[in-house]
Amino acid sequence: MIVNFFAFKLIVIIALSSFNEVQTLNILGVFPLPAKSHFFVFAPYLKELANRGHNVTVISFYPQKDPIPNYHDINLSDNSQPPQISHPVTKSLFVIFLSLTLLQALAGPFTCRMLLEDENVQNLWATQTKFDLVVVEQFNSDCGLALAHILGAPVIGITSHTLMPWHYSRFGVPYNPSYVTFDFFEGGPHPTFLQRILRTIIYNHVNFVFYHVTHRLEQNIIGEFFNDVPPLIELAKDIKLVLVYQNFMLSGSTIMPSNIIEVGGYHVAKVKPLPDELRKFIEDSEHGVIYISFGTLLKASTIRPDTLQEIINALEELPQRVIWKWNKQSLPGNPKNIYLAKWLPQNDILAHPKVLAFYSHCGLLGTTEAIYHGVPIVGMPIYGDQPTNAAAIEESGLGVQLHYVLLTKDYLLEKFKTVLDPK
Ligand SMILES: *[C@@H]1O[C@H](CO)[C@@H](O)[C@H](O)[C@H]1NC(C)=O
Ligand SMILES: *[C@@H]1O[C@H](CO)[C@@H](O)[C@H](O)[C@H]1NC(C)=O
Image 1 (cartoon, rainbow, N blue to C red):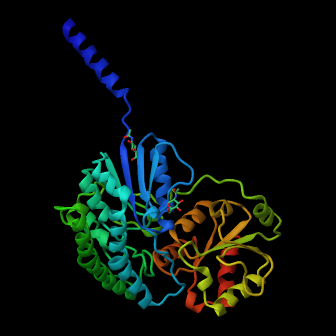
Image 2 (cartoon, helix red, strand yellow):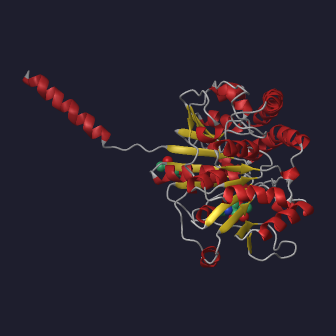
Image 3 (tube, helix red, strand yellow):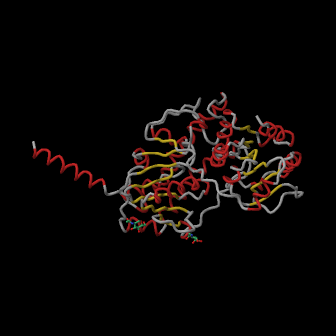
């Protein structure tokens, strides 16, 4: 009995002392897509991993300007020039169809090659660096999975948007066009009959392109660097966990396996004080402020001149001041009461109580920030996940949406009237 008790104490002491040692991981992040708005979502996650003591190495086009402890960059722009991805403001179905196809068939394999040709990336497998975990963006390329396979590490997937149509089957998520939203096309969780038909056609098209064109091209590129990498589709099925940047409040409730985790909303940062000039502009306004931004990928200055004039005319009739993220020096006619800048602290602006409405393209980040701060949205979606977000915003009463092709001064004023209504 006494011996048993002694043995028990010994086991407890050994167990406790082994808990003392905190295990941190060696983590690799693979983000070869040159799209800043995607990386905006991943950066807070990667920084937090480093902050918690993990050793994080990040392959991307967006290295940190100031060094962060435990955070190491592999700067892809050292060896390759990222293509400038920006999208003209147009809503033609043909353009969407084409750009979606090219995004998979061309841009996917292109980023694959940039990734594997990078000297510092090659160095990782040449020196057989040991990683405990590889975090790979799930978008238009699966090359990162091959890299993780070569490095012999398990994979966590992460997205900066809702699941892409070609992700459903590999993660075992049922796709049903009657309630699962589909980025790139209109309609939220309650689509019309026509939207369901369109979803079904495009779902099959993009799945075909991704698995028969993108994967084949990428597998060939991978073959130039390594022997014996299993088919990417098999590697994809072996992803342990996926963090999906969506929230059922916007994208509707769907059936998901327990390793697909919705993380939408975590990127919203603590509010910082506004620069003096901007703060004064907002606080001196008698009737509040409307904030306008069409994001980083959309070139706002490619808006048709007559449409732009309609927008300006509408803004001039409103008593509110306007802050507009605009990538040119000026607007036609130099309207007053409009504050223009190429870059703006969006989250801090939206947090200001005098900011009454957000005129937006409905990108996921801005939309999430506006919802967080309770600012109603006038959505003018163009492409990507924007139409889906806009539909969801309207369905849930968080704002209204308008159709870019129909835009006139009165139409826009009517939408602003709805969201500026104090109710
Ligand atoms: C952390 O990562 C860097 C860059 O990949 C590497 O040079 C370093 O050896 C790693 N540190 C540890 C303790 O594994
Ligand atoms: C990344 O590489 C580009 C191109 O060589 C360079 O201009 C940039 O300063 C680098 N960024 C960092 C943080 O080292």
